[in-house]
Figure 1 (spheres, rainbow, N blue to C red):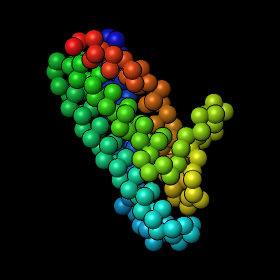
Figure 2: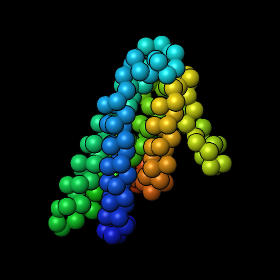
Figure 3: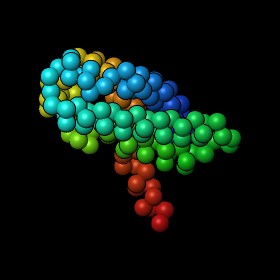
Length: 162
């Protein structure tokens, strides 16, 4: 891939991660276990896992954003470093969003084709979590479509160079 394509992908991802980081941090700074339980009765353990997943995703987004910022503002543009960063962002941020570690929600891939939200929950989430995930889903979907190439290509390149 040419430098301009990789750089434009990196800039798009930087923009989307910046938005996602702000949305996640705003949510995490304003919601507690108690406030979530007031919205929807669910076990404390479930909400602890939800908040843990969201904090983990926020950290991954922030790390990815920092990496994007460094690479986009370094001259000359380092294509190999950008590709490695995009590969890492795909696996840490995007995969974490659609398939969180604690398996509290999952992606119904059939829903993605119908234009509906594709995230399904294994518990009854409060409205604030539904709103949060819906607000993030389109950006993560757009990043995934843009970066799916890196799912296999980067690993293939690394194996060929050995």
